[in-house]
Length: 422
Picture 1 (cartoon, one colour):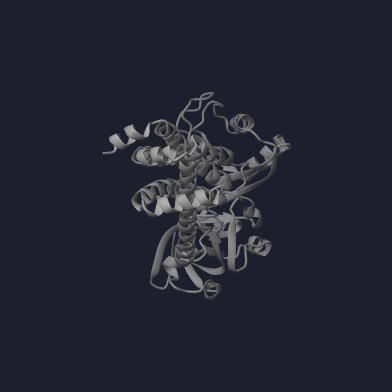
Picture 2 (tube, rainbow, N blue to C red; picture 1 turned 60 degrees about the vertical axis):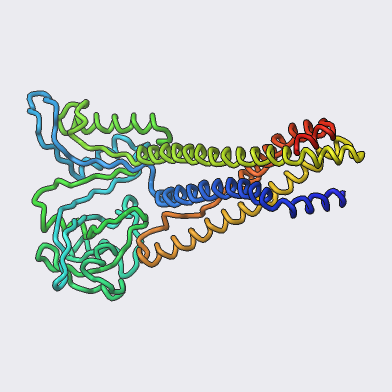
């Protein structure tokens, strides 16, 4: 065994070009497979993490206008919703609705000194956190006293702060007086969206304050329902249709009129994202396997050429008394060694590139976003089993590509081999 390895190393030293070509094909195939799948997994993990805390069963109802006539009512009739509708829905569906959150919103202009930003203001009760995930960076949240006294206080997002409070620490912003449509509000807190995809600049204020300043009736802008016990696409769709029918009876519009109320279910969005992820992963696998096949073809071609070039050498070994089995084992062992070594090199380089990309992207996100949300590149990597399987496929390809010509070469007579290589 030791003699065989010595011969192999001697052969590799005298054929460095062949060694490098075979090794490059193997290492490049493994390297590209790891980088492609690893970065793909990192991006998908980052996007998935952005939704991990999101409630999959939050159903939001927004009023709109009718498109179908109903019981003498004309089309294009405005439909309104109120807090009473939330209570009515929870009473009608107690097994599926655990709570509801009303919202008032409108477009406003926020200014501080000579800085301005057009955005919107959302009026909430203290329980709004169930549907609007935020991270409080400084100050406090909306409380019951703000609601009772209709205080002119607000929470501003980090995205808005970049426009009206550039380069200031969130803690220094708390207590400042900002103008919202020329009305003075005190900044009670600074928040950031908990999701990296959320670039909201929305100002959050007490529900009663927003109503008293900009609304003159009991209508609300949006109603969010916190649902439970809906674990499939079919169940969610049935629930939405039941709600639409219930609201149609209350608001006097056709149950088939889907424009009258805009109903959004985050379960559908989560399902869409899940299907999108599956498609992307399938695409990554197709490209990755295509890259691996290209590497296999390269290794196979080089092995075929290598054995043909060594026909004379193998014939001489046979003439000197070497057995067919030992000659073929020599060729195949050399193929396995080269493929395994360079496959390992490709694996290390691929992992190194992924880790470097992770560090760079994370550092860039932390610096640029200043805590706007989680990184879009999270936990990149490839299952070790996949890497091992890809390497074994490369090895098997080298073995198959080398076995048949090696078997044919040792069956050639020495005279014919010498003549063929002259």
